Image (cartoon, rainbow, N blue to C red; front, side):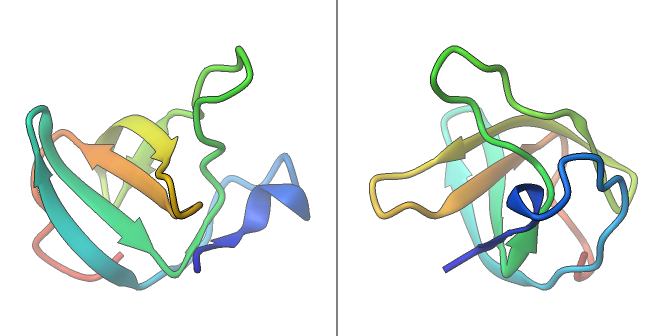
Length: 80
């Protein structure tokens, strides 16, 4: 399960994480990390924006299992 760093520090701007899963979506490549500071879309609040290893994050959402996914502009080439 992804550790949700945003619950501990809503202003966190940098963090290190490992990619746990990569999947292709109809909108591009999404990654699941072992931890994230990106708040996902939900409850009328838009997702956080930013980059992972300089790759723009286009969307962040939580799946049915509660895992947080990050849609990236391009596929990652290294661990985040």
